[in-house]
Every structure is written in structure tokens, then in C-alpha cells.
Amino acid sequence: MKLQSVGKEPIAGETRTFLTGKVLVNNDRNYLFMKRCIDILGAIFGLIILSPLFLFVSLLIKFENKSGPVFFRQQRIGKDGKVFFMYKFRSMVSNAEALKATLVQKNEATGPVFKIRHDPRVTKVGKFIRKTSIDELPQLVNVLKGEMSLVGPRPPLPDEVEQYNEFERQRLCVTPGLTCYWQVSGRSNMSFQDWILLDLKYIEQRNLRVDFKLIFRTFFVLFGSKDAF
Image (cartoon, rainbow, N blue to C red; front, side, top):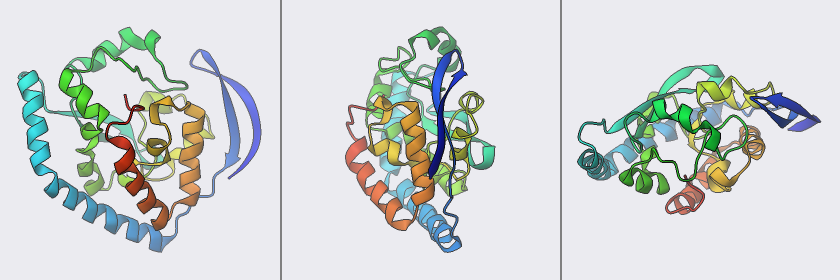
């Protein structure tokens, strides 16, 4: 990826550094075919082998809040800007989306991303499953459906994408994934700009060796990571 210029751009009330440059996407047909085969096999195997954990977590969520749903379905932006519903175990109170507007001033993330280290909307069970990233496991269904891949940039929210500049929108040119460089390189402690650069780095470098390497590293980073919130 050749960066052409660096500048400042006012976005969403803040001045954000932005870069411009064209990302060269690895769209090798053989790689994409093998990647999809691995996604399907990996998702099926994961859903089967993790089914006891799914049941246990579902019971914990229901035990803490009997009236709330077990799963949380949220609109996300996928490849080429296509909207889809991403699945997660519910880790927050049932009206978390409605409460978000009251917490905007406490946002600890840079750029068009909303994250709070001690988010008051997170439940007791939610703290554990978010810390260990167990809340993300239902996205194996998204992988099986072809909306996501095991490896790829994380799918952003629609309101985040509305604030992207042209350079940042390039991260939407591939299928989003469960894990990528961001997950193994600092996660929530990383700036938005560095996050974007890592995603674009993956888009250019992606191949089966890189994918397997990231999957392997993810197992050692996610469980109990101090950078997850």
C-alpha cells in the first residue's frame, strides 16, 4: 500500500488525521475458493464442538435476566457496503442501544468508534463473556452464511461508516471477519487510524498462511486479554 499524502480532516466534531492511497486487494480466485471452504468447515466444526458452551452461556444469560433475549442481533456493514445482521451473545442490558446516546461523552475510542472500558450497560455475565470474547462465537453462523469470514476486518456499524473518508472505506472491499490484525495487536487500546492501517495491511497481504497465523495467534490473545472491553 503506497500512502500518497497525510493531512487533517474535521469529522464528527474532532480533527482526525487521514491518509490517502490505493489499496491493492488480493482477490486471487484459488485463495478465495480455499478461504471459503475453510470458513464453511471451520464454522460447522466450531458450532458442533462449542454447542455445550453455547448452552451453558445461554443458561447464564437467562439466569441473570430472564426477560431479556440470549442473543443480540445488530446491523453491521459488510463487503462493498452491504448491510447484514451480526449475531452475538447478549452481554448488555436489554435497552443498551437506547442508553448509548446518554454515554456518548464518555467514549474512550478515537475516530468513529464507540467504546467505554467500564460500560455501565454491561451485565455481570457480559463482563466475563466480553473479556474472553465468548460473546463473539455466534458469529460462526454469519461465517456459515457467507456474511463474514473467519479472518477479515471487523464489520463496522452503519453510523461509523457514515463518518469514514474515502481512504478508510477501503476496508469494506473484502468480507469482514471474526479476527484480524487488530485482535492480536492491542485491540481497544489501539487508535482508530492504526486499526484502519492494520486492516488495509491485511487486505493487501491476505493469503492462507496469513489467515492460519492470525487464527492461531487469536487463541492465545483473546482469552483474558486485558485489551478487550
